[in-house]
Image 1 (cartoon, each protein chain N blue to C red):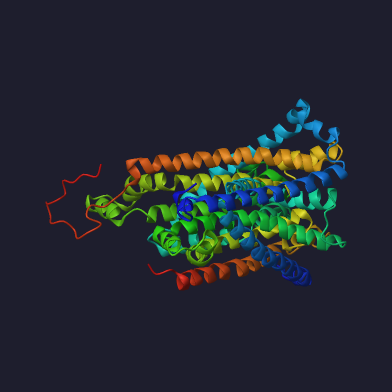
Image 2 (cartoon, chains in turn green, cyan):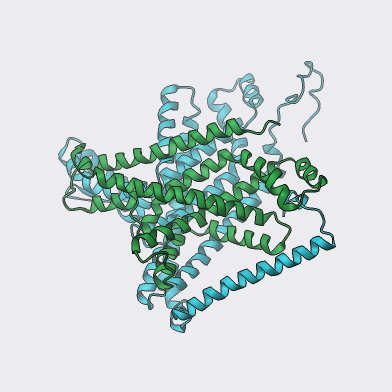
Length: 227
Length: 327
């Protein structure tokens, strides 16, 4: 039962799965941060249409299961509407998975950032206005830098959740580690060694998530705004 | 809008109003363009054909597919919520224990299940028992396995046949949701108890209560009101995550609406996705509303305002100032 040979026979496949997970997570981290920042600035902007769009977007994406979001991207937009990123099917699925995961995570980043904007003292915004900064200037130079420093720790939790959520891309036919695990388990030749396999995958994820948590915790302490 | 949002900009003057107007128009035009492009694309792919949309106006589709799916979703969510709350309470309190041999293992369990993806947990429950059970059946633990499945796990539909344990998709989903959300709730419970001012437990100890009484009569009642909103928002997460059952073919709302309906009605994936999304959004938003309402209510109630007298300044001289009751 604790035979590790079958696990190491499939070790390359599992590593490739983790590499695919990392590729998805890294791209989604960057993109979701951009989407989240944009949305948060929409939600505090003076233009009512932008505010309404931000609110609507967050409400829809936050309340839809990620499985459905990713399936709509892969089966709906990629297959049926034929909106493809590339002629290679797997590349196109990858980018749709990145886009779906980022769109979903972006809603959470936006909410975190909005909470961060609320922690910036009123005086900061008033001072920014009184020296004549416009809305965009005060947001860019005064508010957002402080808001970002306040939300490093919660942002870390959002990113950890995102790393774990990459497994859901298995539903959208992206061959990340969960799908690889399932394929290995389904192999008829793979009778023994399921426990080492799951142990390995679990440890792999702990290696990804625990240091991320510690890093963001450390960063939050280092960057904390002294008030 | 929150008041912070409005202090970011002044009350618009004539120039700002003109600029905002212009921005509104530009933004609206961009949205309209994107929407038109999408509609045009949908039309080009024949997605507005009537036969793709009419299934959702038929009662038999709702009665035969969507509603049973919704019932399965709610069933899994309800069972998992109860178990997760139990798990969370036990492990959250265990992490607060004075004995390191309770505290440390509980901490390891909570961190482990919080750190690995829910889908992997569901796969674990779905695939592993089936493969491992024949070997256990031949070992000295075979009898224990048979009895535990027969008398306990059979409640969740787990079956054992000649030593091979089969876990149904429902039980696997419930297991995953319980372990993951239970671990998160354990942290909520721990944080809730820790957030109660120290004076409360000190006072409780000083009137002669034991550890058990302090926790049960003083700390927990205050902590539960404080953590109620966090618990409800975790239940929203749990409800949303039941959709992962789709991947192991548990017949919940997403499977029923997004797999079975398109398979039977001209592959209307987009339409089915929209309908299913609306159901999920309605469900989750009403739960979130409930959480907000709870939060507002608990902020009003006095029971959460556990303040220790004199916590702000230097402690009052004995017998002086104790009369100031918190209202």
